[in-house]
Length: 438
Image (cartoon, rainbow, N blue to C red):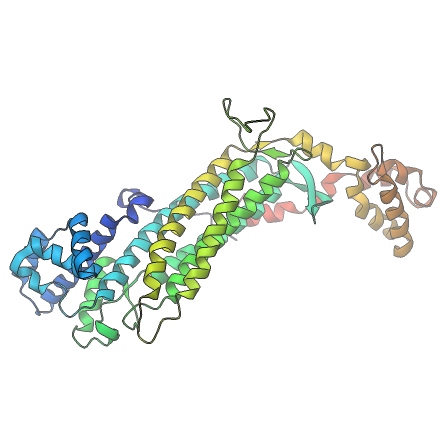
C-alpha cells in the first residue's frame, strides 16, 4: 500500500528556488557554516565566547565586494573571508580556524541542496494530489489501451493515471530518502584528517546546521552523494517526460482523447489558425533532456584525484542550480497541465470501437477455446476476421464474427455479445485503485 499521508514542509522556512542559487544565498550559507564552527569552538573552549558574540553581531558581506577581492586573489573563499573580516575586525582571526575551503564549500552546498529538495518535495506533493484527483474523476472513463502504439484492449483513463500516481509516489519516496543522504556536512580540515580541528567541532557545528557529519570525508565530501542527487532529479523529470509524451500522443489530431488547456486568446501557429499544439508537454520533454544530461556530468564528478581536486566545482556551478530550478519548474508545469487537462470521453469511445471493436479479439478467442475449440483453429478464425476488418473504412470485426459459421456453431448470439462488453476488462481494476487509495 502506498502512503496516503503527504509530506509536509514548513513553507515559511523556504525561500524561492531561484534565490537559493544566487551568489548572495551561497555566501549566506558560508557565513552560517563559519558562525556554527565558531560557536562549536567556543562551546569546547577553543576560542573566547566573547569573540563569538562579536562575530555574530558584526559578521556580514557584500557580494560585489567579494567579487572585487576574488578578481585579485583568484580564490573565492579567501575573498569571502577577507570581506567578512572587513566587517568583524580583530575577532575575525577566530573565523575559519583549522578549516579548509572545502569545509565551507561542501557544507554550504549541502544546505542549498537540502532547501532546494524541500521545495521540490512541496511541488511534488501538489502533483500527487492533482493526479490523484483526475484518477478519481476518470476511474470509469473507458478508453483503448495501446501497446506498440497499436490498439490493444480496453482500460480506463483513471487506470492510466493510477500508473502515473504510483510512479510519482515512488519518486517521492526516493527524494525523501535522498534528503537524508545529502544532508551531510564536513568540518575536518585539509585532506579530512582533523589534524587542526577537533571532530567534536564538526559534530556540534553540523547539528546546529541540521546536518549529519560525513562519516569519512577526504578534503571534500565524496561526489557519489551529489551524483545520486542529480540522478534522482533526472529520474523524476524522466517520469514527467513520460506523462508529457503520453499527453502529446493522445492529443494528436487523429486520436484527440485528451488535450492541453487552450486559453481563449492563445495562438497555436503564426501561419495556421486552426492549430492547438501541445506546447507545454513538448517543453517538458525538452527540459527533461537537460536534467538527464546533467546526471551524466554529475557521474563524471565522482572520480576526483586523490583526496581532492576542483574539477567538480565548475561543473556543479552549472548542473546543481540548473537541475534544481528546472525540476521545480517542470513540476509546476506538469501539475498545471494535469489539473486543467481537457478529456474527451466520446472520442475515447469512438477510437475504442474502430473497425468494429477489433480490440475484443482476445475475448472472442478465449471464449471459443472455453467452449471446446482448438486454440490454433480459434486463433486462425478470429485473426482472419480481424485482418479483414483492419484498415477498411467500413471494416466491422463484430459483424464478421457474428456471421462466421465456425463461430456461430460454437457461440450463441448472447455469448458473442458478452465478448464485446468492455466491463469485462475492468472488473479487477478496483484492486489497483485500492492499493493507491483512489
